[in-house]
Length: 296
Image 1: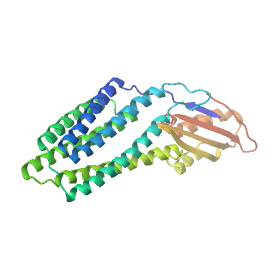
Image 2 (image 1 turned 30 degrees about the vertical axis):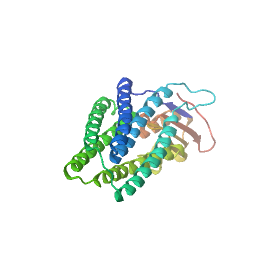
Image 3 (image 1 turned 30 degrees about the horizontal axis):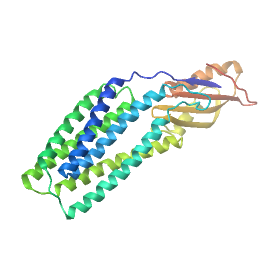
Image 4 (image 1 turned 90 degrees about the vertical axis):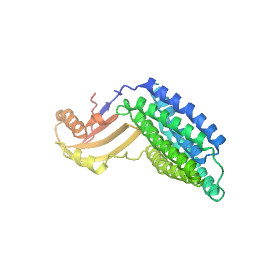
């Protein structure tokens, strides 16, 4: 059996992540209070989106911390799955918030409420600045860590939401059209829902140990069959432990001298590009009888 772990992890700019988390969480509270004071549903819906930013950053920080804990006899895979469980909870909460915002916007369409547009505009501009700073903090690390990349995309999307609220506040101030506020809330809610569904679908796929996006079992099997001396491939499984930690296992049936198995394993890892997997487990079975060889 060939068994290979990829333990190297990219350096994570944790300090920048903490700064971004602190900024977004602080402004989240300001935006909720401001939305209640100004009676702006658009601000409250943007605050809901800011909540996703804060959650994404918090999950990234907690996942980095827990991933450092070693595996033990009860948790042989360690604590990597916590990131997925938290992401799934985040998605479910977001669905509830988005649906409530859409319902509240539909009710307000018929009875628009007066809005303190000046306060709405000030808070939205402050939100735009906070999101810009957070994007700058995360931009350097988003190419090194999938966790941070996800958080960076959340903040980027909220940056666009802040622009929408600013435009809405200006239009309401200039035209007096109060229906613009619930319309913006609907737009932001509809922006959040598809991304929330994608997050939930990805989380469920990992928890169900489905084949990760970007991997094709038939293609992988075909590549393994091209390895010299391999006559059959079965029990092929590809699954993710968490985001960015993809495992693969397979049984390779071979017809050759046992002395060639080590080279066969090396060739198999080469065609798989083993460095893209967190763990590679290959079991070799001779055509006439099973033999289990271990190579490190």
